[in-house]
Length: 325
Image (cartoon, rainbow, N blue to C red; front, side, top):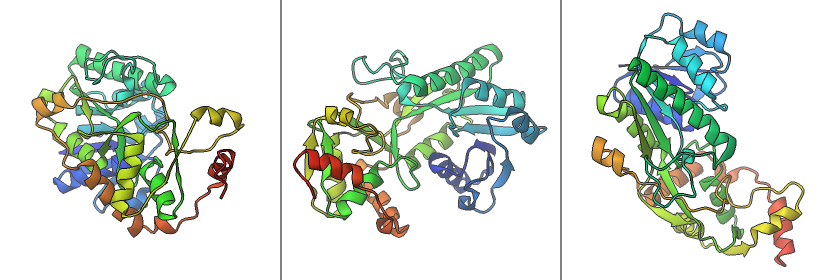
């Protein structure tokens, strides 16, 4: 198959590139070229900013693809998706869009399924994803274009652009306490980037996936505190959890990160993956522990354990808790 990836050099899209090449597909990426040294051999590169619509049209003029994987987020708006569709009008067989489980109304009952009402619970990020989904679904309904909406939640794995699992590796490896908001009991759910890439590749060209949305993530839920303790177990290191009232952060003019890049929020998440399992036979190959173990091995191999890390804000917070270092 001829495959186009909008993105290609960052985290999820890089894993999709590798998965498609592994399957013997021809892969073209369209991006700004900032990290293309990561790309495997054999990938064709189109240099363009997908948000510059004239450049996008010029870069894609006359080209046709069996499958397009829209994964770049800059943030990607509905107009950006519409521009990509128009630039490839009539020359794409299947359009797969990386949306997010954050399109759901997180005040609804758990678990969140593909039929859970969508809402702006998560603000501007959700709005961009919702509006982009609507553009694609309208194109599907009006013109029959096969489209698939892929909705992952927290994704872990090598090259993660979110400082989540690596945030805890950094602190546990250095023997530092980990600050935990409240009782650390909010549920979190993670999927592995390679499982997500596998799902994208399996959906491509599958008529059953056309016009559908799918939650793609791991099957396990874990509390915030449990996530940290599992990471410590994988690392073979002890960890001290220091609980704090999240309201303390309001006393700082510019609070820093205290629990990963985006894991503090006060809401449970639990997404059903039954639809993808039953309709497409998709299921995760990584358990949460196995995914963390593989990511930690990558972290060490990349020498990230030796990178400088700033702990000044955490030390300020620890001092207010009477735990000065």
